[in-house]
Length: 437
Image (spheres, rainbow, N blue to C red):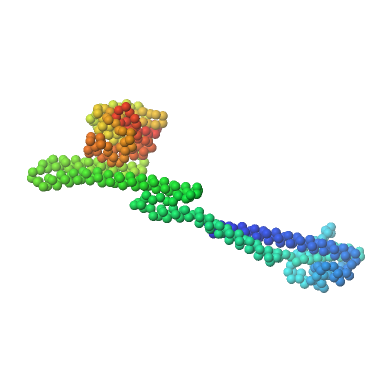
């Protein structure tokens, strides 16, 4: 940025200096031309008054002039071309007062000049008065480009310094943010980048980075908790199976191996259930979007209720033509998880309702059990989270059914919440409705 600003400043200063020099040169050229014309008019007046001899004697102020008679002879001359041959041969055209031309190089003068030619009448003949002046050099005078160069150098230097200083001050917080981010790792994720005092874009950047780090810390904490809970839940059935086998091996002849096999099989079934749920959560976390088939919620509930026998009475209240767009198998998994959860906690009855609310499809599963306290309504959706009542009623539960249901709902662009009810727990799924093709 400093180099770019310096380059732009140098180009601007160079352009301005060139414009100033060109303007000064044009002004000097005009001034010299006017002086030549004035001198030519004075000489013309002297010739008309027959003072040619006085001109030849050099009584007028010195000037580069020649007076040429009708025969082309130099009758008088002055300045550096005194005694020189005729410096020009052109004459004004008929009807013109005077004419001017540039000659390079004229006789007796080094460099180019502008020659002004006037016609004058003398003794009945037409004579010609030539007055020349040196052309202005491109630099006009030596001090002008030196002065312009000095001013430009000061401006360019000041621009470079101020730009460098401003950029350094502006980017210093960015350097601090970069340094802090480079030192933040998974083991020291609690650190945050410094927030500048100025209310500018860099402050917004620092605040955004800190907000991102907050979310990252939350995700890391959930991952640590999930890993810890998963390892504990996976270790429990493995430990149980190992203990049963080790105890049986202490007295192999006195053990009912069929009973041991059933016990190990139960542990393996629990382990398989946990692994299956973990794989499903991994697929959902990977963001694999649902397919785009149209699913009728009422038909889905009817098929699921007819597929398996329930220990509690299930009372459906299903509105027809409530359709959503999604993956039938995952929606079935969601419904099954809600029904299994309701079956564990219901006393005698489970209500399943399907209805439409404008552009939203609603599926409710409500049991008549003890319900869930409001403070625990978010806890039950955490992975491996199991309330005391749930552990007492089903010791073999994985604690992943409701989190999987929530992830499926989110994958379909919907929500799953626990809402108020007179008795028991009421799980409400809301999904965007989709019209039939």
